[in-house]
Length: 413
Image (cartoon, rainbow, N blue to C red; front, top):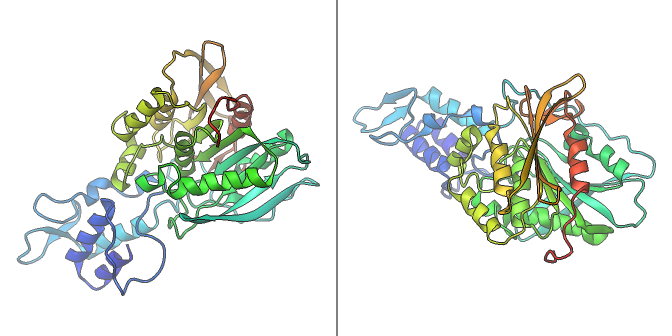
């Protein structure tokens, strides 16, 4: 993206357009000694409305952009005007830094030091492996005294931080009530310009590679340093973090007992930047990599229990993506489905789908929140991307998690 910006400033529009299209197709930016050091090229963080795929599709007559085109003398292809190309570059670079127009989300507040219960700790740490280094925060409740306790790993959304995500979800308060550890891995701007987990990258969708290896490494580090019940380890996230949580469940069914996906996407929903935009708009619809992951699960791999939340007015990640998370988690065995209607006190109404096995245990739980946008349901205005009008996703996720333990016959982590 830096190279495309530089070429545009120099008036070399044909080269800038070609480079931009290559980046948007998932290609790498060529090495350039004049390129300044900094974040990686254009990445995606969960805001589908910011840039239109149609605007950057290749022209049948040559490299170009489908809107705002002008022709250069003697040129066989259509080129964008300087203003259009600059606008596209600016839009690409700021993806995810503003909330969608219809999102019921609060802007990021100024971060303040959290007030902790007496005896509780909110610690800073860092983990490194060959895939890189990621900082993280760890909440240790006041009731922890060395006994084996559950661990919840929370993956923030784009432009968020562990402190912001903790404040918005109130997960630390829930952990204090139930005596759980909570780890908050942090994405860095060096890995993604908007601090989004790279859920759409093939290299970040596989076990023991890329970001999944870092998140699993943080999980195991906490398990090594504290007394954690290995049967009660969970992972949850919002938006890009929700998509990353779905990846962690698919890649590490031997590590996590259940997952929580809020306003996210299924593992394998995208494999590059264009398919990510398409998935956010309309879901994967059971095609491509998503189907392959489901086949693996049906052929004997443990299917991880999942709880899913999605607003039906989410204009950033289409609600059908919640359906696909559930579909991906559905086991080969038949499930009994029960549908409940409800309303949060003074807030949103919702439809709740419960899918239970023959023994009556709910394996999959889906909440469709009517009138809600791209925001953590029931969250606090103290954090960004929250909708206080409920229902309380944090309360329900913790309840669902504590109802599920990884079986004693599951493979060791």
